Length: 290
Image (tube, rainbow, N blue to C red; front, top):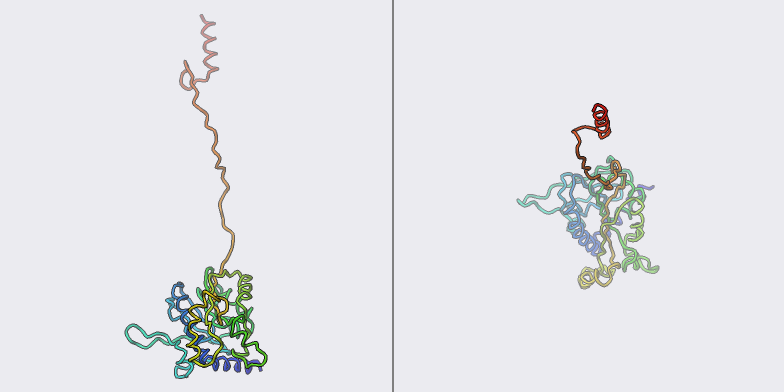
């Protein structure tokens, strides 16, 4: 029964991403994640969920995976919403087709990776559609190396899209099966897991409209949103770093205070290596012999 419920949620999300607002959101997230992961270095990177968003295409790590569970169906290259999302990997410089992406099937709350082995984890709307968001976050914290980075995308409940979702007499604008997490609430969760927020940003400031031409007409709101209403974007991104605080050996404590140095003493009429008392006794002996 739970599997059927998860399948229905994945189909609902896939259908919503095929709409004009879904493509509008994917375009912003693709541009945003391309700039974030391009300068993250290491050896192993992982994307959790949303395979129609190629979150690791600009990253240069030698080992990159895209994991999917029952919530996210595997997209085909011939599907309509896959082609319209503009999330295909770029072609190679020599004109060859893009390399095939590696997909893993696993549960997000039980990742098949050892402790401290991944340098980067990208979670596009993973927590909102996960079976247990807290356990998923703990798993990500477990597999990340110290100073490893995680990138999280989520819908902003405190936005025009979130307000439209909560109107009682209107149909849901966003997928109704998702449990949306507020930006500040998520920051509190990350702080409890020893994550340090490195940066955050909001996007998609256009009103909740379904027609593509109307979304294009309100494109000026994206240009002014970061300045005039920065926390009202429909989607947010958070970049966090895993901090590990431990002991640091400082060595033995040493007394660095300067000690007083005695000045040289001047001794006259003294043979080398002769004690003054011996010299006095020798003088008394000479007087008795005289």
